[in-house]
Length: 137
Image: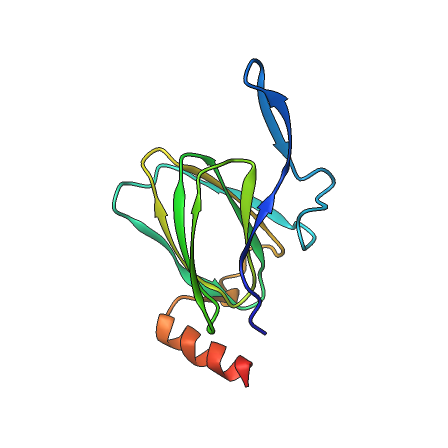
């Protein structure tokens, strides 16, 4: 099990004159049933967020304001994404390590497939690599 992260383009309506609305419209672009929504804001410059993988939880991350550089590792390959458009989200499968670098003033919104459960988190990169290698067998 080593799904690959990918970008999701949300339905967008509006114009420069009146502004825009981006929507999941019945969640058809989200590859899971949404159980939890949370947002992250006020991250000081230079603080590295993420630094974990989830055993079961899938996520879609959106930079609602500002930008986030996301480094991912699914145990087989590493990718880097820059989220700087609120109409684009990043799908993060389970067992995907993420490091998040927030630009000042960024507000991120995250949609998840599960409710928060600390036991779902892998917070040690060496442990993640060992588990990911075992899953790849």
